[in-house]
Amino acid sequence: MTRAENQTFDGERPFYNLDGLELKNVTIGVGESALKETNNILADGCTFEGRYPFWCNKGVKIINCKFGDDARAALWYSQDTTIENTVFDSPKAIREMDRVKLKNVKVNNAIEYLWFCRGVEIEDTEILNGDYLFLHSENIKCKNFKFQGKYSFQYCKNIEIEDSVLDTKDAFWMTENVTLKRCVVKGEYLAWYCKNLTLIDCQISGTQPLCYAENLRMENCTMGADADLAFEYSSVNATIKGNITSVKNPTTGMIVADSISEIILDENIRKPADCVIKVNKQ
Image (cartoon, rainbow, N blue to C red; front, side):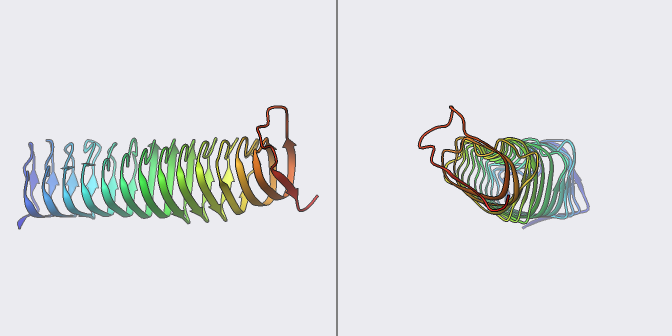
């Protein structure tokens, strides 16, 4: 086991290809690839300032750390990684990873985070200013998660999200097997072209949500006044509390709401064109 404490390391690959490394209150300064191909790492209370610090690793635990603005592409191509009580200010981290856990993490510059990852668990975490979060990732679980950005969860599979707030335009496009429970989802063009999306006790806002969806299910959800032109060309079974501003050309299934301000069924509706639309209150 190699151990370093209260030191600063600069340059390229100061800890290359080690098996067993403990860093305590260490600063990784200017340089690249500080821990490349190094396995079984514990980093506690460390600051990372150089580029590409964690690449091609197995068995990493990062706690109470900070990744500065220049620590870009901080974690790639690694397996079995746990990150807790840590702040990221750098872009393009956590890519091409297997089995990664984030708890009490704050990401302030989430450009291109979590691409092509498999087996991700997120809890008590906030990710801000993100574009294309989770692109092409799968087997994702999130709880008490806050996200702000655009184009999140595109082309993803097998997602479970609970008790979270997602402020994200164009989210969940082309996804498969997604379940959200007790979530607030804000954003335009939600979940177009998705398959097997389930929303339970969720609040939805943003124009033209849930269009071109296959096997969409909603239970006890609410839809904001701006969530208009919903369900176009979707197969849907939905129970909505309160009002829906407008429903447009759903393909099949059933929609039940307390009220619907406008139902649009025009010449462009697609077969089988047999969706049942019911209003509980007038």
